[in-house]
Length: 550
Image 1 (cartoon, rainbow, N blue to C red):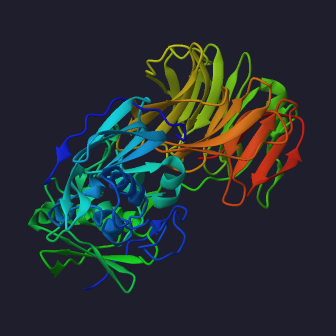
Image 2: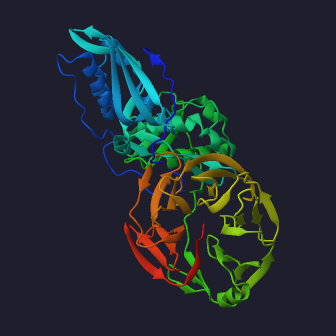
Image 3: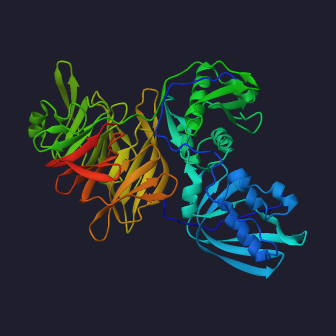
């Protein structure tokens, strides 16, 4: 989330410190542009002869912007012995404001910084709360020049530098049904060692909060035989130790699927060759989805349900009679548009299109209904405006189960991620609106069982109006400012916030679109606008609600 927050950090000073096998996978969007893996983002300056102790420390911190060649320029500021021991990948601090240098003597330099975020060795991003951190540097003279003999195992960057040097690169785990892959967003500088770091992050396991609803097919304790993943001719060579042999045939297929989805994000990687102790493994291909592609977006008017995109755009046959009968204000569609749900003040109905017509069933209407949405397995989620109320989840037979949300306040909006493994809920409770991210645990059939509390962030621009998943790892949030305008931002689940261009109208609901249309926006005047690239155009009027299949 692109706002910097920070808390006190305790930093410990350290003076030591084949045969490719493809898996058919539904790939998400490319996250990196084709580029050299040791791309020279910045060219930091080498030490200047005769530099003071403070200038050496300042130059060393500035050289943390250059990860190329294993931070070779930054290592020039270190003594020869410490240079070999310094581990810059242990963590990165995102600095807010200017550093403050405290010189007690030439051999000890203390630098005070305000920290907005921390990225650990496995690429996990943590927003902090704005407290001061002291970094201590011991120096000595080497060949007549000051050099650093002891320093924290870290680098320090500003937010603009972080946004250029680091890339969002999720590693993939399995959902609770083992039928789809779920991304765990990480941040790595693009270097020749990035494939190795990504595989080590995968071996280290999911983020703690995700561990209750995702898993890995890679047996616990598995490691790389040599701490390196080489890429040759577009093939990433991954060699695991003997612990990997504990996986059965299906687990090995899933294990390879995790590796392929994780590594194929990198430029120059087209496939993965998996071996164990040097022996290439014959692994059967498996079809597994990375989330689910979103289908058409629909609008609800006071006379019909209208498909807004595709060759079948226009009013849905027979929908007009149901709209007239139910007088709905809320609409939900499933992934293929076969199932529709309409909810009004007194009635909620589930409609299913068949080869011989439309079947319908009435559902129990929750009190103070705020949002309805289908998930990937055609379960209908119904959200009350009271965040303390459980979520009602209906199946195709009319059965209902309750999922505890355990929040307090007003539920403003809620949306399931494509694939249904995560849920975003916006809550208004006090002065600041907060968006909560939950994991969704499911049984073998895909039916939701429980919600797993996870991350949350505060909206920084105003009151949250609507939330929508812009992709599998970030939320597009519509906020209303104090001036009454609505603005858009992309909040990474873990990471900086990105400001988008201002919509030309005041929005009341946001929905994700297809590949070409990134967002649908419902306005306070009942218009539907679409965002393509960075431009907006109006596609419908007289709309009461909008919904995109998941």
